Image (cartoon, rainbow, N blue to C red):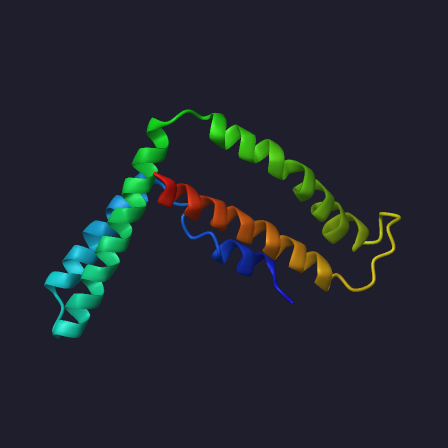
Length: 127
């Protein structure tokens, strides 16, 4: 069964800011300079390019309207409320919903997250 940490690990850039990404790029570049083998240097350069891509996405997102973020929040708040009610309120015994096995609800969460990533990928290729 998935936990909250596994869901959060699917969203690596959610809790990172531009300053932390820039600091990580600096640390990785120092790591590349201090690398003893070519494999370590190449791995460090790959991490730098990934972090630079994350930084570029954050910069581009900050240039656009906040309407997209608000619409995603509004659309996601309904299912999030229902799932939180079932997983936290009802599982602790305060609610009235009789829940047996909640594996199907994790499937719902994976479908929602999959649709989010699919729509983000489709909008990336559409541009």
